[in-house]
Length: 90
Image: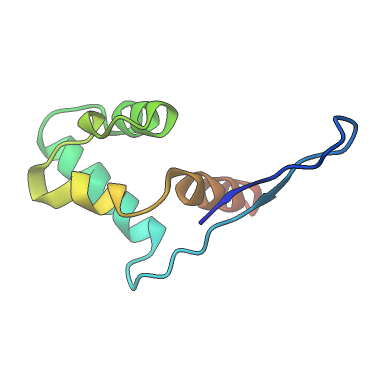
């Protein structure tokens, strides 16, 4: 699981150790499925996913097509890490 490795001194940088997503379905696949489910229900998918990632509140994600269960099976920090890596690789 991800988390901060804190040091005793306030002068040092806290290190973030990323969690490993160890399921067969990739973060990309889950986000695509959640995006599609939100869109089918008439929501703004990007806005809803951002709301979930910022707040941690799963009610931002519809239960349609099992989207809420899919996205909550992945730690939010893992999703954000994958999004940042993908964005910076472009």
